[in-house]
Length: 437
Image (cartoon, rainbow, N blue to C red; front, side, top):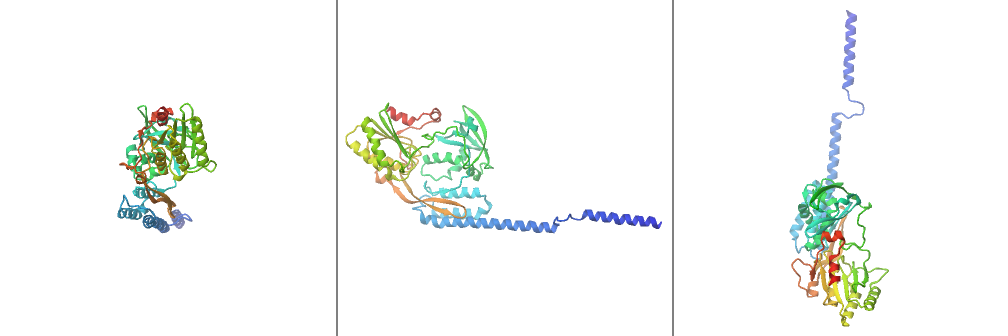
């Protein structure tokens, strides 16, 4: 009996020992108290990081609030200072709850509200879609793609993600500083090629890819487009470096005599002087050809001219004025587009002063007749961005005695707008009109 009791007692002890061993925490695993302490520490660190980030953002926003009104020529011609300050204060208050992309988008909107196309937030655009877009009329079309997306070529964009393109454009418009709708039509397609803006607006939920819905020949198709990091080479279908409608060019300026039209075509793409081909000897060479060939037309193409130094063109306008003053019957044409802005517009005025009968052909300019300019930069140390801002105001409508129309733009004498069908066929409708005139 005793032996049985002893055996039973030993079994009970062993059973309790086993249970105790199984119920104990494995070595190295924190207890419930330890887990709570660790979670609390992580939360405290996370909160501190968030507070530090918000403080840094607020510091930059307050710098904008103080410095931009002092540095800009006149930032409050459209928005009031009270509304501008309130917008910056509001962003500072909610910045802790916003992603970096949302902060950037909100700040772009605030800076754009000044209404000066030369004053804008400069952002690091790390990713791009491998497509090129352009507005034809009020519609957005795909004009170039990576070879893997060839089926998208020349199609109309109707939706991004679940958002109709009209709504996408409405939201993006608030981020783009512009003085007229023509410049907006230039900048909107470029902004739509950057996923960061769409992501910051909440239109897409990932910067890595987006669903584009397009229409062509009455058929709708969807494409899942993967974004490309900056610097990665894209195998575009169209690599033409002298494509007028895409706004690309090879040189600041160049010319070609077209004997079949008895016309001198002068392409003036940027108000910048080339180091290896100065403007003055260039002009001498060009007019030697004009006089030798007896050109009936001089065509100055400013459709891609985004500005620079207005004085660069003076050797040409001075020589043109002398040439016309000699009683030459040569017709002068000036080609302009939505991409013609800043000193590119001043070039129109200078050419028309030299040749008063010059005919302007194309689209109204994206740049304003009276506009801000002479750009400087304000660096934001914490956000790692900068703001370009204007330091002067130019009233060229008064200087050249030109009535500034509603919409603040230079309108052509002959309005011609290329269509997507023109682009697909490689047809330059503006130049064709002038050559046939």
